[in-house]
Image 1 (cartoon, each protein chain N blue to C red):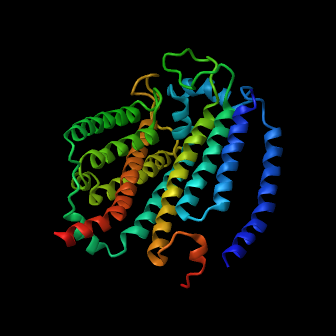
Image 2 (image 1 turned 180 degrees about the vertical axis):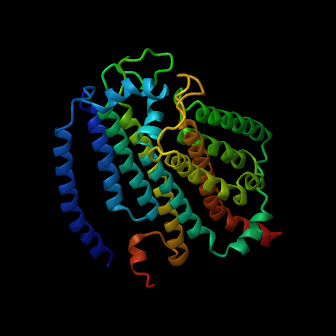
Image 3 (image 1 turned 60 degrees about the horizontal axis):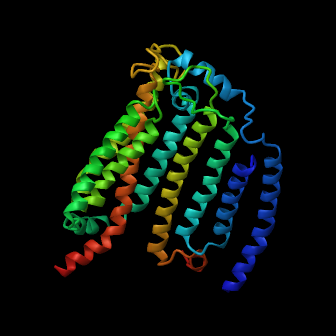
Length: 256
Length: 114
């Protein structure tokens, strides 16, 4: 039976891989030589991004302004898949596991790890917030900073305990935050619509280039995205951690 | 030397595909998918590279300085976010399958009756 299946796989895979491979070779042959980007969009945006939006990080200007509508779709992909994960994992035998997990004690015993880990969590949190707030001036942005913030919170578990992690990953607080993150993006878009401009049009004045007061309504989109990304990542980590630790928690409780 | 980035992208894609085809484990399969997707990051960034170009960030850099394409960079960002979310969803499905069937081997799962 098993042999048969691997033969079926080979029969399906070989022509498919050959076809994809041929298409890839065809596409690669037509690419510009490395280092000889042909443009024009990259060159144009590098020229007009700063004069138009006063946003010195052109990548962030593209993400939240020139391609802002795209990013909204991306936010919904993130929101939708987190929703999917939560629906798949939260439902099952939760109340029972919840009791075990509430009593679970797995604190890190090494003082050195606890102290350094706590420091690392604080420093990472600051770096994350800095990446978000200056994301449209210097390298960074809502997505990158949001992930770093979530990582900093995860350090609370890695260097502390599951009990401490449960406090920072409180779902009653995170679920609304995630909703605010994705809803806030739409609201900023609708605000433009209400004032008679196209959806997601950059409403506010461009401000002073190279400062935190630049980019118009772009910083708002940046911050709501950071909120969404950080909350979504913490929710995902919390879900998978619960799944992973539930058996250990059950064992510990039945032993005691 | 100038083809090396493209060759790397093709290689990463091929390795990931090979893993996905021969995979006997849904978690391994999800990771192979991430590997395939990583090749698109390399490819996108390679396409947008301009010889001796700096980052497309003009804080303290004179406007008009030679810089790489910012569009592919923002596309790569989108790409990474989508990759992460999709992997999370696949892993949740794999967990669910494991709870139902006690296995993450697609061949064993195929024999499981609803």
